[in-house]
Image (cartoon, rainbow, N blue to C red; front, side):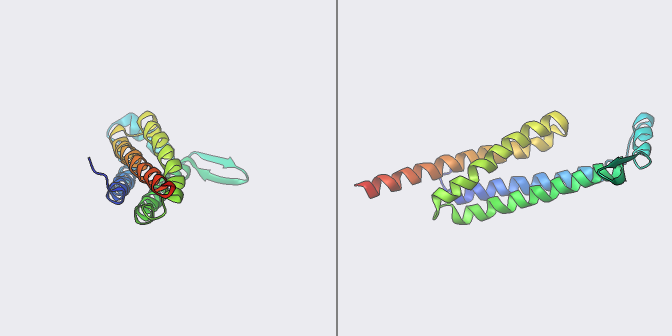
Amino acid sequence: MVNNSKLILRLAACMIFINAAIHIYTHLQWQSGTDAATLAIINQLPLAKLSFLGVTHTLSDYFNGYAYIVAIFLVLVGALLWALSDISEEYTAPGLKLLIPITIFLVVLFFYTILFFIPGEAGFSGLATLLCTRAIVVLHHGHVEEHLTKAE
């Protein structure tokens, strides 16, 4: 098992970057329905308008907007994991304080993607979750050893 938190977090970041790429790719395909029922719904989304908080957009606009913001967020999470791979070994306590909430987010993302979206895409957030969990264990173990060494 890999005990290098830098490598583990970079692999997790790569999983999230792949997740973002697949998310964008699959989203760009949403208007290509294969059957008449699907195409009927797809053709109605750009026509159906919804007013919300004084702004009117089509359902297609909302669908696209949410998809793009999720893709941007995934890229930013991947970038944060990559940055944490550089700093977490030297600054373990702050690294753990950032990594733990990110890992919790990835767990939620995993189940949310399985339930509402594409299960195959969820595999990448699942792998990233496992990698981040391993990085937490490695970093915490090193952090505890550092404190024990200082105590002696």
